[in-house]
Image 1 (cartoon, rainbow, N blue to C red):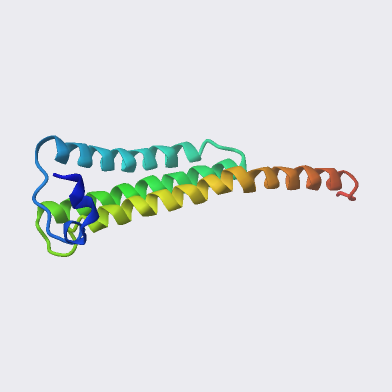
Image 2 (cartoon, rainbow, N blue to C red; image 1 turned 120 degrees about the horizontal axis):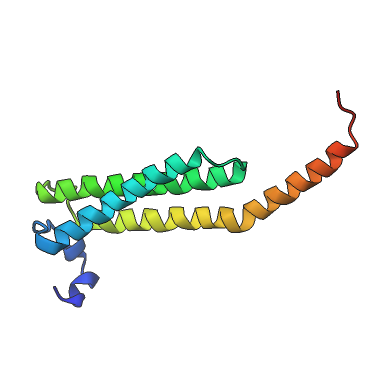
Length: 133
């Protein structure tokens, strides 16, 4: 493959050949790894007490599971030579979804979690002065 191919639309929107050898196994094991990581993180989610950590784990788990499963489905279509659904364009789309979704989770971790912690501290401070049962 030549790097010049990456800049031509016909490369991305044409029917690829079957993946064989090491390439096939790298793709399949990579996507299976994402699915398994999503499932393991989902299991770890149950052991978390803090609400914002549960939300982060759930979001990361969803990314791994959805992107891994989408990749495995794309690999199936590619190996079966199904027109349109096996195009190389779909792998770029899957990677783009992975990056955008990951950036949203990262934004939540960096921006929203500190705000949530401040709100919780403020709420605890206010609850001290509120009448209770």
